[in-house]
Image (cartoon, rainbow, N blue to C red; front, side):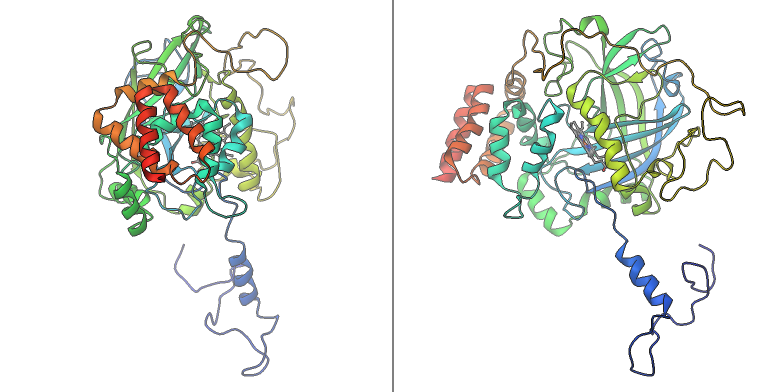
Length: 483
Ligand code: HEM
């Protein structure tokens, strides 16, 4: 903003910003005091709807640098050369809390990256966990209702949380992860990120690979215990947001080494786990991590509302060489985010400075709508046209996928070693004795808040099926707490 007198929204100088205009000294206020009316009206409209999930978050800009050759697997231009740099914006978040909720809570963390590539923005909207609670998008609204405030009590209720998880055994793996040590990261800098879903990469020759992304923190993993988090959440509700901003201000730029697991398309059908089931990982022994990049955050946003609150990320924002997989959760997300953006930020959300392409331009024939900025000037608004307008390329971003069978509400196909508990059990058995102890205590404390025995028992039973020792210890700990 340039220096000069305070003005109205229309730019007229303001004489008095302390006293409103009245009919006589001490009399009622006049409608002709437009400054007063304008200020009150604008203030009333400062909020936009908060994100329905992941409302609480913080973001920063940075750079993605290619460190490994992945051109045999994808033709994405931003990945075409070792050493190539692409600007990014990353928004971290918690999931369940509202906009003003504390950062230091047990909850997955969002890890949403926007790559401003020369072929358009590529958004990878992931979490700090490699898996998720459910495997079909149709369950997402119900699931989130159990994480949010109960319609009657207005609070998060252990009954709802554990009722849903107990009745949705596919959540056992993610819940075991969440109540373990990594469930409360010490900061956004000290945690890993994952694309979580399986995505498609395709190369120049049109060959298809299924991939999973991993971002490993270079700061090292650091977590809070339940007790530490309880104190920090009260003392400094903005702990994660502050930590990120201050680290960047100090020039301590956080970074992540970026890896991908790569599965040739032909192996998907016979892989021991359904590779498109978001409740499962691909063990590294099956598909090792291939390093291909470094992501560094090095610039804070200047205006939180404009750049963080109004930032939008969509799993449907792909670029040539990258596409979706048939994962039913991902398919639902391809719709949900754009719809949320149109509602939350508006039909021109994609054209705000933080959201628009930075390394190319958007050339569309869509026009107008609320807050249209006239960026197309007088260009024709239809295609095909004879006036040099934008044209189609005839080359899809991703390769087609073969399908079989009939339409219907189908259950996610099960592969040879798939069940809801096997990977949760493996995760438990990987833990040290101390970790197991903390996991059992964390879960027992949470389950002991449940009011009905049948709900508690059903929840415990899922962990019993993952691992007998896990179930036995959890049952004893819950009993001790519930009496
Ligand atoms: C079918 C399942 C899901 C649905 C329907 C869904 C829907 C949504 C919606 C509507 C938003 C708010 C978007 C906005 O207002 O800008 C959101 C945010 C988010 N979701 Fe999901 N979600 C799903 C699953 C997931 C999964 C599996 C992940 C991670 C792997 C994830 C990560 C995120 C992140 C990181 C954000 C915040 C993005 C930001 O920082 O703006 N979601 N989700």
